[in-house]
Image (cartoon, rainbow, N blue to C red; front, side, top):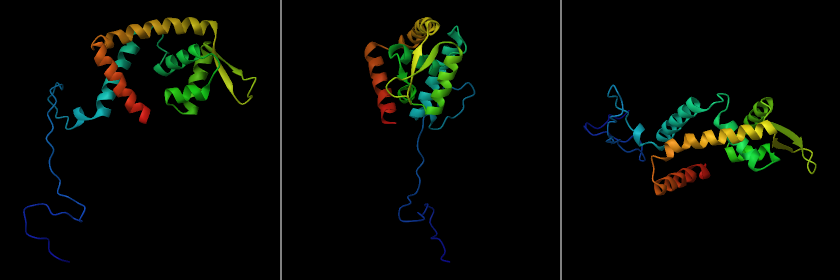
Length: 175
């Protein structure tokens, strides 16, 4: 076995390997104990997740019905705006799998907010319809959600908000 060259520089193992350079990352000052967050503050996913957690905590703190999660709320809005919407269309719009949407609709049906009706055109398809209590709950929840959103939207100018939403859509539309 040949001896490695006596050099202080790292030697690539293969022709495609390059010596690693240290990256310079700014230390985050947002930590109470002065933790070095490495590259976390520069990662899109980390920042989106932190923003989502902040929104989720406020959502849970302020919604009158603690059983309502964002997925249930979103599905209710879709069913309200599109009476008879198919479960697969809800799944596609929310970016969730079919099993998850079935569970979501089951939860809403158990609460008395929606009913499934077999399609007269395609017996394999079930349309989702809000019930009278579901329509009332949807109206109330929508008002609460818009109040919740206002707290966060108020941090941005109209132009910044349009840009933020446009950038987020670019991420999830390519997913």
